[in-house]
Amino acid sequence: MQFSSSLLENAVNEFAKLPGIGKKTALRLVLHLLKQSTGEVTRFSDVMARMRNEIKFCRRCHNVADGDICSICANSGRKQEVICVVESIRDVIAIESTQQFNGVYHVLGGVISPLDGIGPDQLQIASLIQRVGTEKTEEIIFALNPNIQGDTTIYYVQKKLAQEHPQAVRVTTIARGIAFGGELEYADEMTLGRSLQNRLPVDKYVTR
Image 1: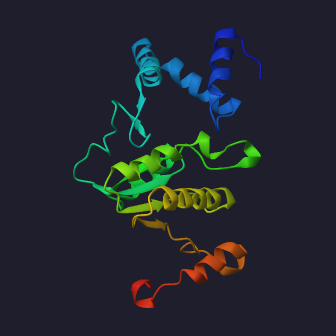
Image 2: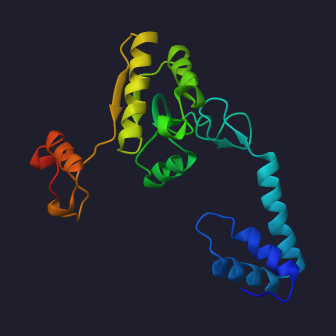
Image 3: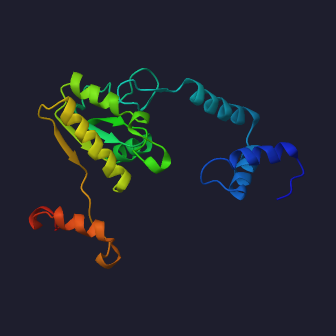
């Protein structure tokens, strides 16, 4: 890809560093900005710079926040005693978009993965254990990806909870099974097996 301007080329190269953005898409974005007024482009760059410089992480759940506490933790209308444990901030956004959960969150910042050099000490596990000890937690819902790393993390945290806080705290995980509209012959063995184990009464499941 040849450029007649080094300024244009540099801008395209920077956009192309973003995940999922190739050189052609980056060029289209840069050309779009060139069509905008100087004020709009300045406003765009100011918003990005301010986001990077001023954004904080909630000292309670580690979600993104404008202050020390995120808006979800600060919402008295949510069930503060129910904690949904997720891997990343993207998972919080995904669950919130369903409008089906009214508790609070705890962002681990990843999952245990020895092959990638990620151990328990590199995640926000200790702060979760501390939360359970200082807050009136009734239930912990694990909403981690259904894979070996996710299951390993759940097992580790559950074991730590039993050691540190043997008092009764309900520990659950999101349901796993065949997706609606999916076909059994294309499901992997683990997913199909979990679907059989987590079977539900027909009158609570079949749509009418």
